[in-house]
Length: 240
Image 1 (spheres, rainbow, N blue to C red):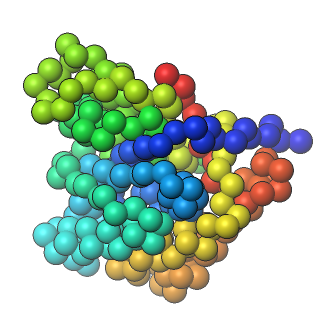
Image 2 (cartoon, rainbow, N blue to C red):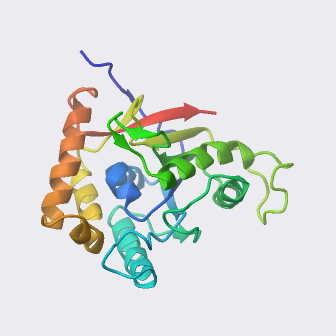
Image 3 (cartoon, one colour):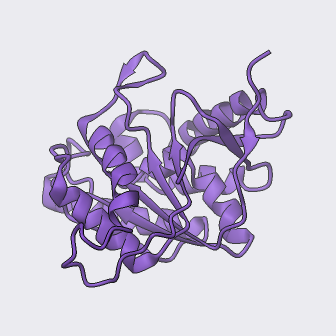
């Protein structure tokens, strides 16, 4: 019997989701975001890049415009209207103080209780090598949660320090601890990923909606085995 997952805490009002690329959240947790916004919680998206290196058939300048538009459309499906971009270069994001500062500044502006990011580990499930951007951004988010509350670290940001981050939830983790019931919002998660049509069509010859549905429904059913048979999105939760 696999170890059961606990429900993710829901006693919060604001979340900030920070990932490397447009589409990262749609592969990881958009259905959970829909559940949160339906419950009246505020979720803001922050993309570290514009995903300009993600479509081989489009030059970076055009790809950036396409992927930004797709990300905003995708976010709207799950009730997110605030989508920001940091403009770090796609594919070569560097972990370091510059990245930590930008993320800490965003945390101070938005004052979230919950941070959301993507798997910072070396692999996906111990089988597939993770990308440098995912690793750099995920690690920087975990570090910036503390940076944002320390007035002596990055003292020159416009907003004042914010030490109110209570949790960091990592989607796509090899070792999840918690989950969010998406029984009522999984369809919106599918439609949210489908909005990344140009990216998916460059990635696979499969119909984008069929591709998104098979992938996300499969993930949710797999998680249900560890969450009282409820369709769910898993996270590894770090408390602060």
